[in-house]
Structures are given as C-alpha cells and as structure tokens.
Image (cartoon, rainbow, N blue to C red):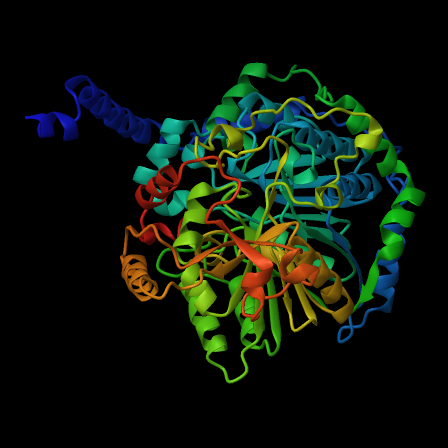
Length: 628
C-alpha cells in the first residue's frame, strides 16, 4: 500500500494532471487556427493608415541625413578594388559586447538606403529597445528598414508589435515561424506546440546578421539583449562578431531576401494577438515614441560615441584588416523540410574540417557533437599525423544551459579519446575586465536585472548556482580557426541542433592575419586564469581499470548514465609547482600533474554532487541530443 501511495499521484494531483492535459488539448484546438484573411487585411490596412509617413530629412538629400562613417569609405574602396575572381574586403573582429552595440548603432545612423537585420532573440531591455528606436529613426530619415526575428524568444508584447507595425512606412518587422500564429507563447501554449506540432515548432531561425546599404555587414553570435553587450547586472556573454565591408554584402542580401519572402516569415498584421491590438488601437493610435531606458546615462554615453566618426576611426576602422575572399554561408528558410534535412550551413564547415592538416582551434558554448562531427573527428584522429584539436567551451559554472552541459559531461571521455584539448571557461575569469566591457568609467551603475521573455522561461536549473557572488560570464562565441589560415565566425554552435534544425549563418574568411587574431582571442579564453583544463584522472593501480570499464558501460547506455566516478576532471594550473618552474602545458605533457591540480568535476558550482548527478541522470536521455 505504501508503495502505491508513493509512486501513484494523489487524487487531487491526478486531477490537476488530467486538467492540464485537457487544457493543453483545448489550446491546441483553439490556438491552431490562423487569423482569417478578412481580419488580417483589416489589420494591415489599419496599421498602414496609422503609419507615420513624415520624413525627418529633406527628400532632396541623397544621403538621407546619415552621419559620416569611416566604414563607408572602406566599403567603397573594397567594391572598387574587387574583381569577380579577386574580391577585397575590410574586416574587424568585434570582441567586447559594448563595442558591438556601439558599432551597430553607428552603422544604423550611417545608413543611406537600406538596413536588414535577422536575429534569434529580441528583448525588451535597454539594448533591444535602443535598437528599435534607432531603426525607427533611420526609417524616419528615409532608409528602408526590414527586420526578421524568430518568434519564440523575441518580443512577447502584442501592443509593442502593434506600435512597430504602424511606426513608419519605411519600417517593417516580420517574425519567423510563429507558434499558433501569435506573437507571444505562454507556457501552456509552449507545451501545446511541443505536443501537437513538434516538427514545425522545432524549426527555428538562429541567424544573426545586420546589413547596411548592401555593403557593410555584421555576423556573429550576438542577439539583441543586454547580456550580449555587457549590459546585464547578473550574467554577461563572452561573444564575438565580425564586421565585413565589401562585396559579400550582396550574398547576405540574397540570403535575407530568401527569408523575407518565405512562407515561414510572417508580417505582424497576420499574427492574431497583434492584429487584435492594431484593430483595438485604430487609425488614431499614438505615434511611436522612443523608450525610457533603465540606464539612461549609459545609453546616452554610447549614443555620443556612436555619432563620433573620429572615435570610430581611431578605435575600430583604423584597425580593420584588408582581406580577400569572405564567404557568407547560410541555410534556406524552412530547415529542415519534412523528409529531408537541408544543411547548407554545415557543409562548408565539414569541408574545412576534413581539409585540416595541422590544427583546429574551436570555440563553442555547447560541446555536444553531432554524429556527423563525431565521425569526422574520428576520421581525423585516425590519421598517421592527426591535427591538434584545441577546444574552448563552457564549464557548468559558466554555461547558460545546465542540461546541455550535462550531455557534454556524459561524453567527455569520448572527446578526450579523440585527442581534444578541452578548456572550460570560468564564470569569473581573471581577465574579465578586458574580455567584457562594462565601461565603469562612465559612472553608470549596473541596472537592476530585467526579466526578459527568455529569462522568464529559463527554469530553475538553467544556470547552476555559484559559490561566489558577482556578474557571471559565459561563453557564447561560435568560432573556428583551421591551420592558422582560415577563420570562421557565425551563429553555428557546431552541435546537432545547429546541424539539423536551426537555420544558421556565418562568415568564412581565407586570411592568415585574421585567423591569427581569432586564434589569439580563443586561446586567451583558454588561458589558466580564464579556464579550467579538462584531463583524465590519474589511474589508481587497483580500481582504475574496473572504474573505467564500468564508466564505459554506463556511458554507452542509450538513456541514463548512472556511474558517478568519471574518467576526466577539471584541473587548475598551479604556477608554484616544480619549484615555481611550471608553465601552461597540454594534458599529454609528462609534467602535467605536477603543474595542475584536480579541482573536481564542477568547480565553483554551489550544489551537492548528488543533486548535480540526479539532474544529469533524470533531466533527459541521450536521445534528446539532437534537440537540446
């Protein structure tokens, strides 16, 4: 009897479960209907009638009152110097978050004809609303502005979308693959989407790109949210973009147009909740106004710098590298289509890895390899002279995805056996002041954290609790260097989801000087002060072999990995070892254990080991690897 009571839900709990199931079923039935064409047309007509058509710049001005930018001169020079067989580009690596936001605002203000943006996340915090305000301001100057955001983790406020729909005749916002034809996805509808329409629900646009006047583009890992620009009071990302000026803009424009014209990309007036807000507000709705920022002093300081062409020249464009070939790779909208996984973004990366001869330097926030990648790295490792593989990724303490880290933890031995040299990023890196830019000299205190759509949906264990307080830093950059000669920067995480489900985009640059800069940046993140080194534990004479055998069997289980004693651990560099002669070395070095000490599986995490292992075992099965 006790067993029955223990394992069966109590009557009241059982009724709640049944009620929830019926609620989800009702939501599926009620929410699955698209807005009817008549209401969609009425909403579109109402928004159009309410749109602002005035221009802040005289129509006779061909420059649309754009600010001066040194990047315009670089783009012009690149286009003039390029030939069909010998393209020319000027590029900048953008390492620090606030620099990335500053350059985006500057380029938007410098636009004369067009601005295109794609993003996975668009939040309602200072970074997100600043970008919206700048884009509407550009439209009011006469610039054609088009923006696509993936619906699932972007703006959830239907009234804000309605305001954007009527903001200006030159501004248009569309969403990718909306759930149940709505802008917002409350938790129950999220669950309903998973249950009823998993294939469609799982198709997300993960691209991040900005293109100005078809000639200056930014591509990388950053979405529009405070934490991507070092503006968060709790957790900032260590991320990376590449700015490229030159003919690659034409390829970016063609990719954007494919998404813009896709059936997956929906105008705001065709979203049921937004259409309702548009019709309720009517044609006399108030004019779009700029937002009140939570940290107005910081926004104002960035705005002043964005207008300063000489500041931009001295700090950014003067350091731009002149390179040749820059390839923009991207998926088609609708990836994957039923019955066929279209992987345009993955093919060029596979080709680059297969051609590697001496070294692969890889940075990814989530070290979870697809079957394609595992097969490829096994092939490389089996060569008589395999390339060295250095990996920079997140520790459990630094990651924004507890469950995804658990998968990399499960397969850590597999990666070490493939020859990977793994460095896991610390949540409080020693060089945080240089890696991220909070610009404390401006005197602006960090704002109170804003709970965005994505943060509200995180769940209790998305971030592991830490032993120490402070602004946590986590890796989000997705980059790769092949043989010191080819650089890759983009949105592709080199994981199963990026390969099979998300649409992705990025730059491939064939230039040794840029590759050297990127390699240095990744290896900086892997320095002992910024990362722990992953290495196998020294084997004990008696139990070492038995432990390895049991661990191998447990890791091979298709769902649960039950064995708690692991093959590998995290190691901290000890400069005092060997009488102070230690230097950072690879785990295969004979002196490694004299210069590094074991700090355990999950350093800095403030959870009992039992709790962590329980979460890892029960949260998911290995079969979920392709959708995490």
